[in-house]
Length: 597
Image 1: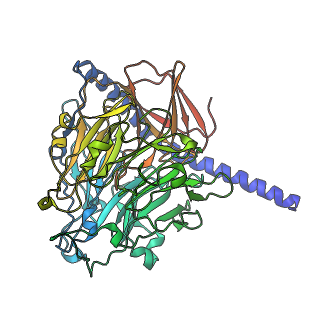
Image 2: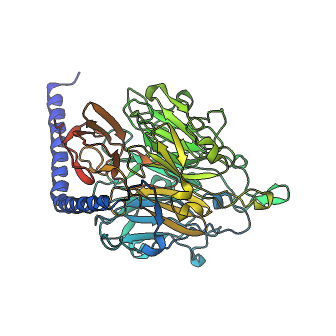
Image 3: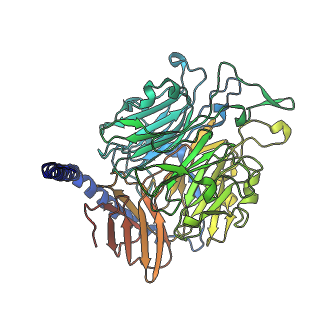
């Protein structure tokens, strides 16, 4: 039994800890008031612009996207560095990270790039790109972008694939993780336009340095207020001795089963800028995965974030936190019905979209798959698990003749029902066998949660152009409440798809700032109350493919009035009520240190 003196010491130490934390938050908040005021002023101006735009809207509802990448200076091509050896990494492509890295109120984009293998840094011309937004949008034109990768310290020479942005050190600036073949690199945002390498445990682990890293997602795995990191690993590939696989006389990239799967990685944020490899201690023990896609949301209905991993030609993972004891996770994909397709087959899982397509208040999943397989839509019923719905809602047939990669749910017309966007393209050129190589992207409109209708041909020129589409992310680049998209294509220019939809519904936007929760708040839950109706939403992390999206959260409201109030549930457990929030604008929401009524 502890002595009274020890108990007093413990209580005093705890009190000092809480006071120190409060002082830390106070210092952070004191320095950010001016920037938050600027954000609120900008969002207020956006509101008036948006109302004028609505008054000029066409009477007929139209979902339209315009590729403005060339016009706005986003000139990037992902180069897979083909050598004729059919290395498997040439099939994966790259993603992007969308965030306001310099905190000027405008979104920026980072793209990783490929290279020729083996990497020769002295003679490798391919580099990543970092496009910084250089001016505010007006009603006449959108902002332009400039590639400042060299100035920022982000002109990387590596076989890159994925990118994920988050503020892991709570300084208010989003940091950047970049994944690739035999390379996992974290960069701390200095807040002055430059980034510096941040050490990771994998830097000194010889086995980890030989892993092939793909997608990654940030989330708070243990409720300590720090963003931890889950990173997918793919397979062991010997580039010095490439395999020779053929279909008839046509050489092609080998099937993933020809390569030994590698284990994923979980890094716990220690809160002091360092990370610990806690993969085993947190229960992430599965080793046979070939992970390509990852997303984090409350998929099990237990109130805590769970990690879904789309694996290539092996069962998917769904890591659910155990209800009691120290934070540990177990794979419950089979028990909850998301490990295999509805027909019981493994998926060539790549892109992962998260959204509540049927508006039952629970996050659903869409997972892209291989050519002739069709994508898988899993409808969530919370603790009861998931039910496959692709065929029932009209998504199975239209996706069979595509090989899908990036996938996102987004409410393109703000009617309150999440639509679905997919980018596609084969992994090998088998056109001589009658199989398409480059493929068109797809956009499906959600018809009230009952079915999805393919609007690809009428949604813009981009959707009529065959490409090798790979990475996909969303972001509101002109602050009009309409989510735009960024697409990375192999050997074709990346696309910046501005949402030009007219006669759309109303919306609410949220820019969350955590204080007890991670500052760059992820996995926030929101209730929207209109009369007796309550709609529930959840912000997720990860998703798309090899990418991270604009962390701000947009809710489509349709044509109905309201809302009467919005209730915000923070990851820390705190609850916050916004009474009668204005429609058609962003709201900067700062987490209280205590519950607010």
